[in-house]
Image (cartoon, rainbow, N blue to C red; front, side, top):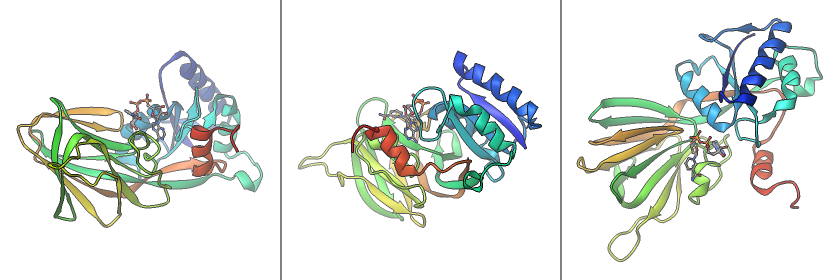
Length: 271
Ligand code: NAD
């Protein structure tokens, strides 16, 4: 198996990476930075976001695995002390069928942004957000080519199902199981009074729908794409939809989404 490691570049993840390379070499695995079959992210969820964007042009043939060096992550669900077990599974060491690797695929969002930079296309794993630089964001939101609302507020967060547990959750969005092909539009502090009106709750679009966002060209905007941030001074439009492509995670053992949600947000001690 050809693999690469993406790490957070701190002391503990550098140490774990060195251990991983040593264990992998012992088991005949081949380090390949250009065309790996599996990319192992060592760090946190942010490290997985970096790995995803680094290999976003090879999603058709790469699977990702995440090892965390601190708290349990949503993408980083292997612990540091399980590294040897992970390498053994990756190298195909015979183990009970119950932990045979399998691939799970999660939906992504595709974006087409038209601005002073021309037409740019992106895919995000968690979400993108749009905010005003100088204050209130004013943006027209269309759904399936019909005007839906004129948004005024701090911003808009449009997330994937696997990103629904991240920023989206902080702004009151629902958690969506990643087997559901959808995107979620959540408001960030919308203004609602007798003059201005937005829906006031998040909404979920199915795969065959799309959303367009328009803002005045004079408005300075900040666009975040997962961990990346882009300044946009003359936005014409953003079109977003559930992407035709998915991201693959190699699951060498079962770890259901709702178990991860419970462990991350509720904890073990509460029944
Ligand atoms: P980071 O690594 O500090 O991540 C911030 C936190 O988000 C971490 O605790 C991380 O574990 C968590 N996180 C990331 N993806 C997650 C997911 N899918 N489910 C649950 N938790 C998740 O910062 P970064 O490297 O810049 O990561 C960018 C991400 O941070 C963004 O994609 C966004 O989701 C998140 N974020 C959240 C908030 C917020 O909750 N108010 C604000 C900004 C960014």
